[in-house]
Image (cartoon, rainbow, N blue to C red):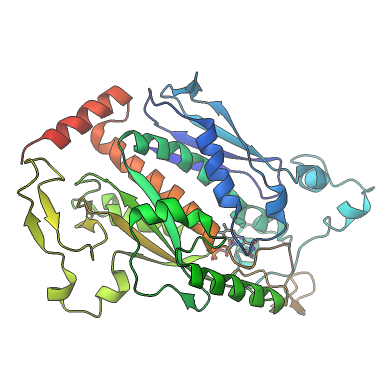
Length: 398
Ligand SMILES: Cc1cc2nc3c(=O)[nH]c(=O)nc-3n(C[C@H](O)[C@H](O)[C@H](O)COP(=O)(O)O)c2cc1C
């Protein structure tokens, strides 16, 4: 089973992503990885840091001549801001007594936790009064490493014609209407909007909403949707709670910083409707051959492509709701850990709204979860073994 983890602090030297158990024999394009890095960086509403974060991935291991060799794949992403932070974030050296004026602004102990962030719980848990030790890792800068790993998993999926796309459903109170968008529209057009929204009118309204929030020194949340196309029937399992595909997808999405709600398919809305309306009718498509994923179809996709913890062959549809960013330029009330007195929360350089970028991170998490489920079923050693298992399965008459 494919696994991945990340390391690195927001203002540390670099971030690292490590994928284990990636099968051998898959061709990986660095250009495609960097394309995903670029997509994560964009989106109207992001802070100044994005202007310097033109992330480029260096692959340290796991590939030769552009082909995976079955060993762990390590990705390195250097933090462009490191030069400004190296005296403050050095792993060994104490902060020097002589600092440049810009370094002096960064070298203070951070002691005023932001409500809504990891600051206070982390300070207590890790027994530190300097919140810098907590917030550096809690920061969603970490998602750059996830996107790098996801971009590699995505190339394995592409080999089996499994595709992933996303779009933004809402920002603040501006929300898409009832119009449904096809997967192809999402794939081709989302990135053309600065907020990755497919409705041009709503796109403008979202931008205005963000502009107003920024003017009011406030922040915004929203909802993004990720879809996965051409997933074969039967990924995941009904047999054990921990192997359910919906659970894995929800965990992947929920692990993204600021995500507070996840639904698959009609999710929360289905709770208020009768079963006779919710459940997607099954029919036999006589025009197709008797092949798995082709023969049995559904008239609708309220289930969002997963039933009983397993993919059912329909598009997988996941929505995630993100709370508004917790670093506010009009800081809210907190307590200073140094004095125990009432104080205003710290203000770090920050984004106003991250939903367009969060959707790209959502794609990366979906890629990892689906690739992992795929290798679990069709073998994780080599491309040839996977290909053989996959095509035998799809050709199987049922
Ligand atoms: C792509 C992305 C960028 C983010 N940027 C910021 C930011 O600039 N400032 C901030 O306070 N939170 C930001 N967040 C959210 C925080 O990282 C998150 O709220 C925090 O770690 C606390 O975790 P929780 O919201 O999951 O409880 C971002 C989240 C994502 C997905």
